[in-house]
Length: 65
Image (cartoon, one colour):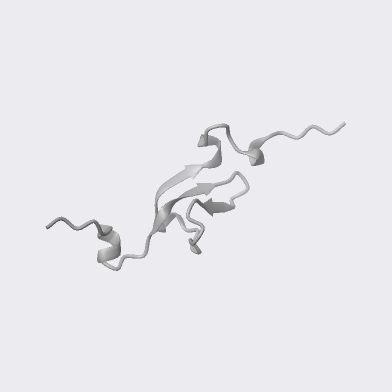
């Protein structure tokens, strides 16, 4: 019988099923709203915000008049 349970879940390994997005100022956010540990080690997919389609507002250059 094939199990549909996550291998990391079944082994009790601390991890997150979301993707971690790291911003240019060093802050991070996860696509899983229940995630409370924003650590690189607990995420299988870690992206810099500039890799997101359309970029990120934190990387926009603001010009003041």
